Length: 535
Image (tube, rainbow, N blue to C red; front, side, top):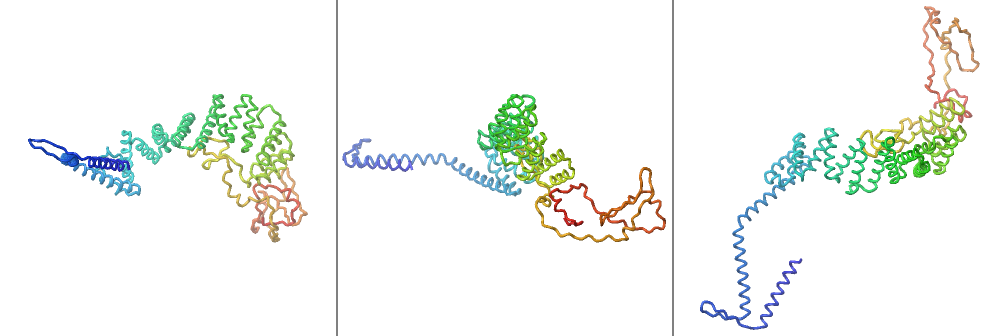
């Protein structure tokens, strides 16, 4: 656009100049070689312009003839390069599609038309073709040659990293990723692999620096970076809690400041504060975390903040937690545990049953069984509660990649992934699908009458009448209808059996469960006189 405007301005200026000359007539006299030439001023101006134009055209023709060899060679060179780039483009498409034969063919064609030092993509296509052909050793050699070229170094490290991952050599893979991350921390694959390596070795400071570099290059969002910093700072505090309490406290407090609702950070920060006799600040941290999301570790540490407290003081602290988060299962369970330690069984039982109503889970039934054992020692009720605990949904725990852990850990023990553990209920048992509603009332099931036992079966019972030392043999009869008494059979009884006695089929015995849960007190009033039930 600017050139068009400049051209129009020049034309307009020439037009004005010629118009100015036309309005002012005059003559021009030129004497050359004894002759005088007299022309008008307008003709002289046109002649001068024509001469200048002719000189320019002649100069252009001379220059074109002079540079014609270079122009011709450049034309063929550009055509050759275009053919090479076309072959390179086709080869890259073939490599992406998995056509190794076509990729190798186009690699050779592109290498003939374009020099590899001028176009690094030829080396990449050559390595990709080797991978498609199954020549992994040759591909690794090509990737290693790329390390000498600063422009291709990251590409070579990426290829060597993928080959090491394919071979399962995690140390080599992390070595190449670390070299790439040192040069370009914005590379996601290099940063993630290096971060896993640093966290696995426990280099929390190095991992924090890498996370800061990722945040500065905007590779990850601010919230994700803060989440990683919280996890790394909490892990650092846990690692230094016994060796360097001050550094551990600084890291734990920073993690708690970034995310007050993260239970592991709150627990380790409060634990360090309690060790330094700062009970008030540690309690405030635990209370804030409890308000956000109740956790059993928070309740345990909060109730035992002062080791010298009496059991009633611990119960009062548990009730304070309950006031902070009402109508929550963890609040009721915390009070129930503290009440059990204080031997206030009525309060413990009431809170445990309230926890079951809010969130039916395994731990609530186990706690209720402990209360029953401590208060009444009724083994039947204890077994019944234990059987319900087996069939109840499992308590929340720290779960990562299918692994259930009692304690939080910064990385997964399976994959090494950072921040893999989540506080949630593990996968339910298959039996829960069948026995998950034993507390709900069931429809009455019609009783099935048991068949009468044949008289011949009773007659076939062998009774031992001989007395053994320390025991007296007497026949006992049971007045209850439908029950038989079978005397145990000993070796002496077999000795008294006549040789011509007729063999009798053994009586069928009722199968007994390995662990009888006992009788539910709630079902005792509805007990029927029927002797056989389907369920």
